[in-house]
Length: 215
Image (cartoon, rainbow, N blue to C red; front, side, top):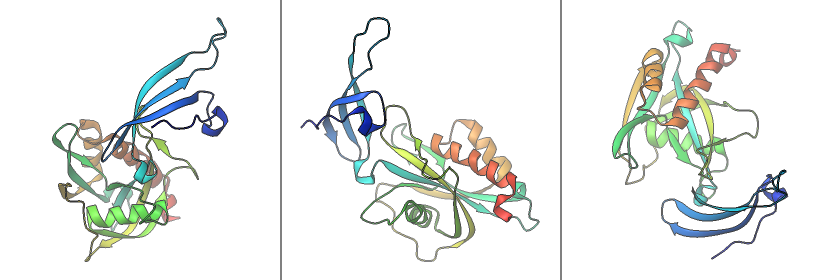
């Protein structure tokens, strides 16, 4: 079933989506999308190209990544620790490292912050007294260029154990780990951590180094 064409103004782009059809739908949805390119300055001709696009419409094409930071007693952020998870990644059929991550469900979550708190509980078994968004207000990061999903990174402070954590999805295989900052930086460089988590780690490092969390 095709969708009605969306204008360049509606999509916030000069590249007009002229048709989009769902070709497969289960956990993720795969679309065939036709896009009209703006006229080439040299020839004056418009071109239409077709792409495979994936995304998660049930999550409003949005997910959250949370950096759970345990402050050190000496107050030095470099001596703090971070709870991470080791999770089965079906695409590469292997365990990888990542931060607590999950999709925004408009039927369950009132806000992106509520989504981040839910995933922190389900995947890391933690509660947070303070959540800080690591992006400019209203910003969200594209996951990859052929995917409709975007993510919002959060820093979680004032952590404590959740004695009644939320239930994980049945297909999730997760181990909870706690590491120091030097080890986490090494994992970011190792190629064994998912990219949205790597990006979130570096934004969190910058924020913590700025001293804003203790202001």
